[in-house]
Image (cartoon, rainbow, N blue to C red; front, side, top):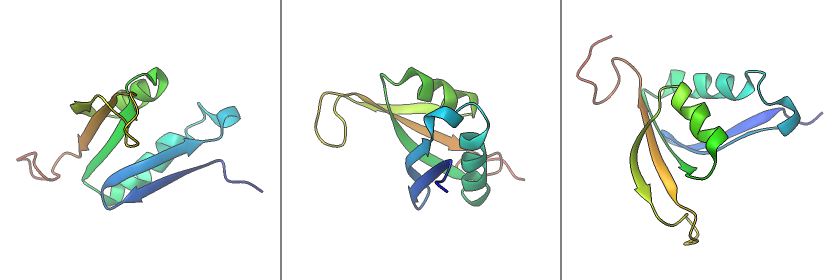
Length: 97
């Protein structure tokens, strides 16, 4: 049996999130992000600026654009948006839980 999806990370940075295309929209990506977020008060990630579906997915989960790069990680002309989400009471919010 193949996995329905996976999340790859380094510390609080999500490096990849993949959900099998035929299973998208069933809460798998959300569950993976919620599990990861339960262990990391601050989450950082990059998303291709042209990937509208991913941008909407992350925006609905509280991510904000904190920067932009004109090139992707391989130096190709595919702009990246740098996103960040801080859980209430997490690092840098000034709030307490």
